[in-house]
Image (cartoon, rainbow, N blue to C red; front, side, top):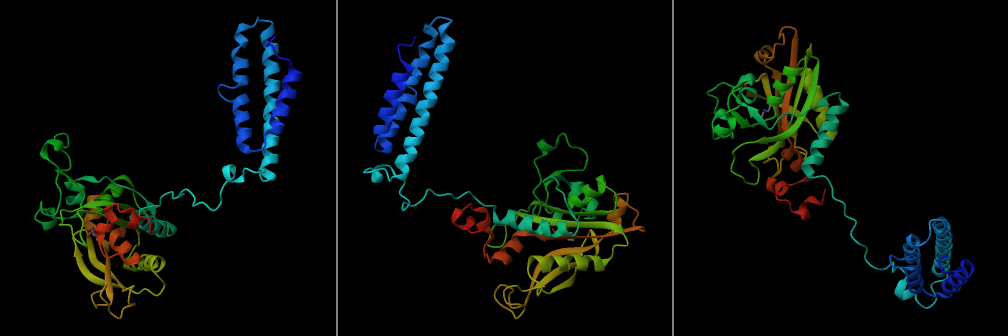
Length: 350
Ligand code: PHE
């Protein structure tokens, strides 16, 4: 039918395969029989030339022979492998003393890692992680946060405003800008949900600062907001203290320093005892023993009222911290630019 006798064919193959002494020889036979231009490929290719009745029989014979040849090759391969491939070890065996192909698979950026670590601490305390847009309206970034028109942060020297033509379709909420902090997301959250609220908001922020070792025109913050009945300053303190102890160490001390933010009242900046010197004073803390890490306060009643939340019934706290600063402290990095230069020698260390 196909011009072959199955028994002879098997016999011939068994002999040939049995005589293969090295993997190389065996691979040559594998190619001869099973390769793309091999014996079986051509046998299969001749099927269409057969009569209708012959085709199924030819097909099943080819399949059977092919299975047998594959089996013979497989078992011969195992024999050669285990017997040390008599005489051909150097050519064919795997040399386990060779340096391996690099298996490096990448790792999270140190800022992403720090952001994830911080979010995880707050998630354990019951905060939900939410996100807001990087392009904001003047209303969300300033007005609703009680930041008056004459406030210096609204100046073009402190905020990136978008070009007028891109603002054509956006009459509500005033001009468009790149958010200068994550606090506008406080407003977005209060617009869309009612208390109890407990969220943290990681994200990118933008300020037209000249770039140097400690400034970048783009950096990251995490905002926190909790609003409910009976929330007071001691809740803020407890939450921040847990955070500081989880992220740094149980020994790290924390202090509030009075400050001013238009959207919180009272407001405070938070310092931690220097994690390099433990508070004795060193070059990292400028001999002060303390490091500033975040801004915080009780949500200003006017902000709650702007959002339609009854400020006699509900109170809340908010805080905002810079992620680069935390990452720099945690990993002992002295130049913020390292985060954004994409130098793999730096990034692979995390
Ligand atoms: N948004 C403030 C900043 O960028 C930080 C802050 C957030 C302060 C929340 C108080 C409450 O400096």
